Image (cartoon, rainbow, N blue to C red; front, side, top):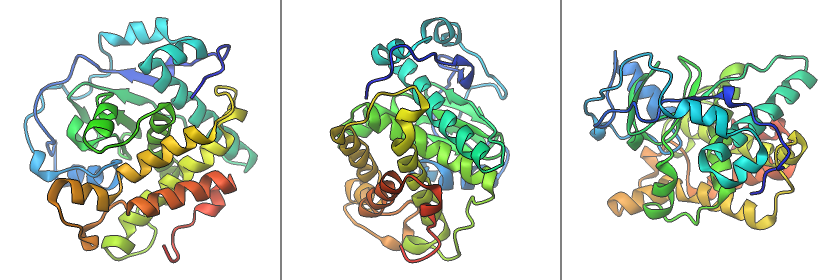
Length: 288
């Protein structure tokens, strides 16, 4: 994915906690609700077996990388050459699209930061680790990301990688923020498993990510998206399908325990969003 080299980036949409993280896995950090939210709104789904100790102090919001991000990530050209600048560029583009969409519909979009962290950090949903994958926390309305996830996506889950695979991840998490603003989080119908509320919520976020790719160039941050780049995003969506992850980790596939949808479903709903370019097409309350 190529950014417009003359685009001006807004570092104010990233909170950099890299270097402040502790060790260990996912901790409850103040009650069971935190683990539930993390399970529902992560890209992969958290693993309760990853419970451990997190050393980050609650409320820490700046880190050693903060100044470098603000000074080094200024233009689209920086996003073309540095990974953290590229993530910033995606955050800027995704939020520019949703700001415009909300405005055209007589509403106000509320921008939120992406928090970059290393290994572990505290959140409004409890303490979290890199093992949980990228996630949106509706309690503090922040997106959390350890950049090491993208290596995991390739090496552990077999994704081909590519810049737009990263863009898909960012857009999916901001899709949850949009759901939050619209009152749609976890309200896509009852039930559990392959047709349950969690799966419907995640598939809608995938669809919202596809809607953004349809409009990404118009935000001014990105140049024209190629079909091969869309293929990278689709490959990433397939890599984090419940069936593929279950097959990889346990050798068995059990749709009754799905929280995010199958690889085929995730690709299907991303494609629906991309092809239609209309959030109204992302209604996952019917047949999946």
